Length: 79
Image 1 (cartoon, rainbow, N blue to C red):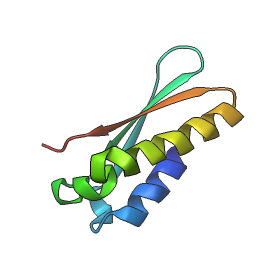
Image 2 (image 1 turned 30 degrees about the horizontal axis):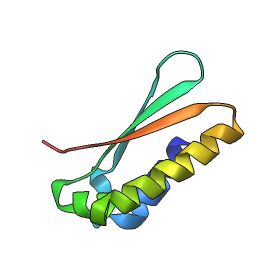
Image 3 (image 1 turned 120 degrees about the vertical axis):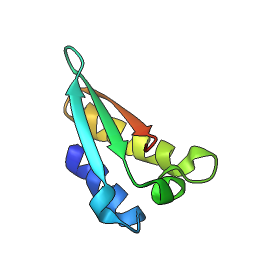
């Protein structure tokens, strides 16, 4: 699942060196992912009204459901 998020993010951004995906297990079958990209690429990853980010979340949920898990994706604002 982490590879799926990385693949999508790398396809969207202009600076692939800034893409970072962190995975945390939060008890049982829940997994939380944090996606970080460069400040300039935030708009590409989030999309208008969050449509791109929401589409990534849907794909992640489907991939997680196939494995019997629940997944959450957070797009973290760069510093």
